[in-house]
Image 1 (tube, one colour):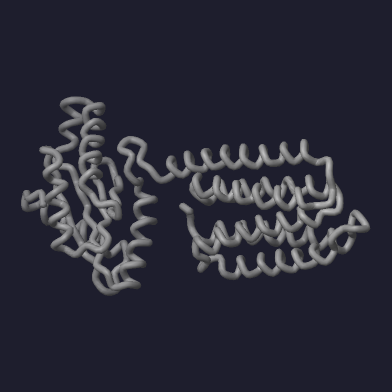
Image 2 (cartoon, helix red, strand yellow):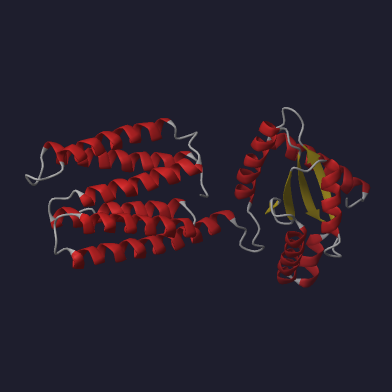
Length: 309
């Protein structure tokens, strides 16, 4: 799940609360004499209470808890399908299935969204088959196809939008906003666990001359070559981002100052173009702004002394 904790929890709270309200309405004013009033009442209480809990815990809810809440919603839909008194009641659950699928596609990665959609369809279809009503197969096939289609389309669209919002279009590395958000999470974890963490600012030397002499196309190609080489040498947990025109930043989790210097020496060996670097390692009481300020001061010293690392 690639977003802040509060937004998925808030929207899931709304889905639970709205579903609970609809079930409460159906329990108070049943549409059929054999409607499962007791189940509808229980689901209403669960939906309204669950929505309240999700709202209260919106800033502390872990990713696994959001996944579990979506699975619970799938189970509830399957139970409602199983206890439906009419074929219309079974098919009327279609919007709920599509809603859960769209939610999973928007907030989870595409693979996880597909798994949720598959589980949702499997459970609800099993419930529908076990239900007393018959002659809803054609309509149910439309519901199932719609769930898979909407989940796939929304998942691909969400992935494209996330990539556009978090990636520098020229180099393919993280943009400034995405880098700061992810580094902030690494920093919070380092403060909590006591692990070291280092950040580095990389500034290209005489990059303006490349653009002036050879054109901006040559400058763009150089940036792509450099970031491609750096990315291959960095570890999986490291995060490279573009901070400005010719300025890049690297977050190095679980890395002290000496370890950061070793990694930067490996980066320097990837390309002959010269660049300067400033490094800062986490200290007590540091926030991201303080870390970056020390790295920037270190970069200035290297620039002034003519050293690249």
